[in-house]
Image 1 (tube, protein in one colour):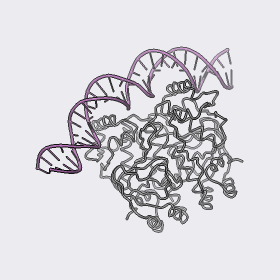
Image 2: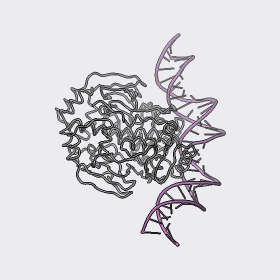
Image 3: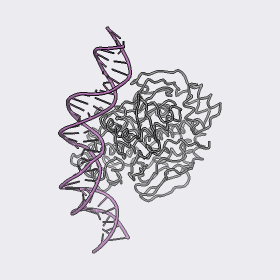
Image 4: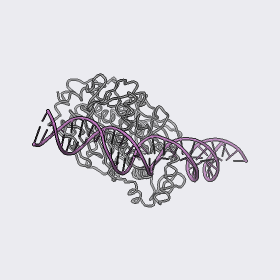
Length: 240
Length: 240
DNA sequence: CGCCTCATTGACCTAGTTCAATTTGGGTGG
DNA sequence: CCACCCAAATTGAACTAGGTCAATGAGGCG
C-alpha cells in the first residue's frame, strides 16, 4: 500500500480505524518522482497540495542572502514534507530531494474534506506537524549548545529512531545517503570539520560508515555521548 | 477585552466574524499570574489547558544534560505559549516568564468544542502553531549561519515586527525586558559576547538601549545589516 | 580511461569563549 | 534622602573550537 510508511508512523502513537485509513488512502492522487537535488516544494510559492514522501530522503532548507545554506529537517519515507503548506499556503523554505525521491500528492481540497469528515484525523495531522516543530526545537538546542562531535552523534541517533519506526533499519544500521556537505548544512559546520568529527566518532567506535550506511555498534553508548533523549520525537503511544 | 492582542494578531491575516470572536472569548476561563522566572508550562507533564499570554514576556527553553540553556522562542502578549500542547498533550520544553506575566487559560476540552463548531477557527489555530514552527526554522538559520552581530540584530528586527502587530511599539522603539543573559541563551552566544556585540551595534548606530527599551533609529538599515526578511512571520493578509 | 564529486589531511587563522576583575544602576531598608 | 546591595553589564587578556585555504586521495560511472 502506498501510504504504508505513513501508517506505520501514525500507528506508533494512534490506533486507526479502517474508515480512517480508507479516508486517507482515497484522498491521495498521483505520484511524482524527483532526482537527487530536485525541488519537491518551492519556497514562497502558493501550493495547493501536500506531498507525502514514500521513497527516498529529502530535506527542508533555506539559504541566507550571503548564500549560506541551513538544512532544518531531514524527511524520510512516511513523512509529509509539507503538510504545513495546508494552513500556511506557502512555505518559508524549500524542500529538496537528497536522494532520488517518490511522493504522492494530497490536494489541499481533499485534505479539507478529510478534516471535515474526521476531527480525529485532523488532530492527528496537526499533531504530526507539531512533531516537526519539536524536531526544530531540538535542532536549535543541538546547534546552539552542543559541540561538533555530539551534534553529529545526536543527528545520527535521531535518524535511528525515526527510521526504525518506518522499518528502514537493520539491527544496528541504516541507509543514510547524506554527503558530508549535507551534514555540514544540517549541523551548521563546515564539511571539512564534519570530516574530522566523523573520524573522531569512528575512532571512538561510536559509529562506522560503509557505502551510504551508518552502523551503530552500541546505541546506548552513542546516545550517552550525544546527550540524546528521544522524548522530543513523541513516539510513545497515547490513549486516543 | 481580554483576548484583544490575540485578535489583533489573528486579524492581521484573517477576518473574524462576531460569532468566531465570541466562541473564542467564551472559551477562556480563569487568568493566572507569574513572577519573572516562574514556570508557565512545565516540560514533560500532561497538560489539559492552553495558556494565552496577555501581559508580559515569556520564552520557551530547554536545558541540556550539561546544564546549557537554549531559548527557542520569545512569546509576547497575544501569543498562545503552548497551543501545541493540545495535539501534543505534553511539552518537550518548558515555558517560563521573562518579566511578570499574566495569562488566560483555554482548557483543551473547550478547545475541542471550538474546533468542532468551527473548522475555520481550527485551521486558523493550526496556522498559528505553524508560524511558531516557521520562527523556529528562521532561528535555526540565524544561529546556524549568521555571525554574532547580525544574529542579535535579526532578533531585534523580529521583535519589532511582532510587537508592532500587537501595538506594543512606539515609532521606533519597544519595551524589551530580556537581560543579556537571556539574549545569550536565545542567540547561542555567551553573555560576555552579547555585551560586546551590542556595543558594536550601538557604535554603528543600528540600535540603542534605554532602560529596557530598544530604540531602532533606522529600521531599513538594521534589516539590511541583519539580512532580515519578514516573510517567515506570515503577516500578509490572505483571502479566507 | 578519465572525469567529477566527495572525502581527507595539514597548516594557519579567527570569531567567539573563558576567566576574572571592575563598574553600573535600579531597588531597598534605615 | 542616602547608603548599601545585588544583579547585570562591561572590559581586558589569554585561549580554543571550528573555519579557511589549499593540496591530495579515492571511489563511481560514462
